[in-house]
Length: 92
Length: 276
Image (cartoon, rainbow over all chains, first blue to last red; front, side, top):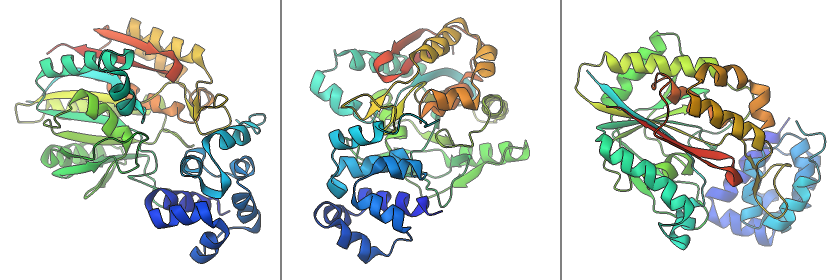
């Protein structure tokens, strides 16, 4: 139950420009340093830029948009777009 | 006695300020906002009350009120770096009136949180950027949670609007008050139902048509009945922003709008009612 921690990390990408830069160049290091209360599944999905899995774990779409906008974890708007649409079936 | 003189429903799409700079004031979006700006200038407002859904910037999941009112001399924003950039504004507010409205609504049974020393995101600032670009009219933001479940019921938001209206009508100062509700009817942002290659999508264009039909006819009761939580979520992950419009409709007495313009590619509309 820590979708909250992923949401918080996404907000840090918006607000903390040094962290934003680190999430682009060295996401594994950036996440390790911050000691977010992530599950192993969340950490793996984040580092893989797997926003479909994160969505299904209850992470907020709007917050994940910051990962796409600011190029975190290998994401970009086109890559994010493909990945998030892959879970369209079965969402509410 | 405060007098309510006009009401508007407006979008807050974060990239519209840069889009209108690029495409010019005579672009479709530029013209639609100009309708609201010109009407609002003629309304000579002393204060604006703006119903808005914060996008996790003024509030966050650690502290997430369903209803809240901003009480301060001023507030700043946007604090969420809308794409393309826009100025960070300092907007004057009206703390004495805001505090009065807070007391009134809580005593009437609405559990409204209050906030001071706050900032806001594009959802407050984009409509103001276009409608009151000089930022010379005090604005009281009233926040309604409209994205993630649980949403407050449409009926409750409408009745809350009515309660604020009664409070304003009993307020001892002569003030001209304008009401704004902001948000989309059908919009998915960064969720599974976005369009290929885009950051958003309009999952339920038929619902946008329905909402606009109710607005055009002044059929607020029918709109409230149709706007179930299920219906709003099905219209997109920000579909509950309609609640801001519904709170605003409590001020217009089923009047027909002076203007009502749909922008289907964004799942929203622009509407204005001016009578005072």
